[in-house]
Length: 210
Image (cartoon, rainbow, N blue to C red):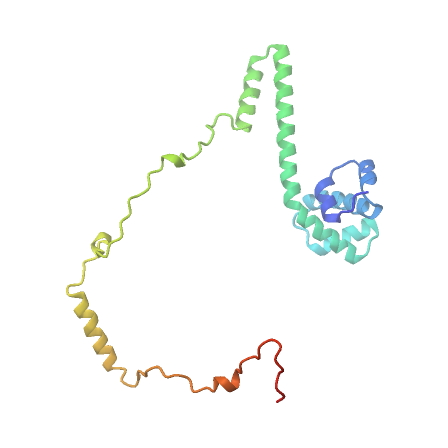
């Protein structure tokens, strides 16, 4: 029997036949999958129901504990996007089968009007009337010849006359307004490195007692 989690079993075999489930999984996993399958249909039929109603319904239908019911709720919610996608794919397939069967029956009766409507419906449903999306020809995209420049006029900005002089004036102006800021020169740290970090003795030498 496969040793997987209940979530993984539900993801892989939500709609697998019960006898096949029992050959693949332990009994508790099978019971979980069957409950989730049943409660998924309830979820779809009651989309606005609060969580507590789902939990109450599971406990009433299957006589399970509240923690187990909340576990089922978590699995069911996690599975809803995948199940909804799978359901849409199933209905698309089912629709195509019905339309093709309608077309075949009309063809046998030589009912050209019904054949035309069925063909139009099939084409519209499968979007065969639309052109396929074309891949972007990346190999034909021309790289723009960018060139570095300090001229702001390329952005539509007028250059400042005597820019360097303006910068010097601003430095002097704001430097004068901040006289309390004192520049200090770098000084060596006054640390006794020889005492703090003594040299290690060479291999084979005795370490002196401290």
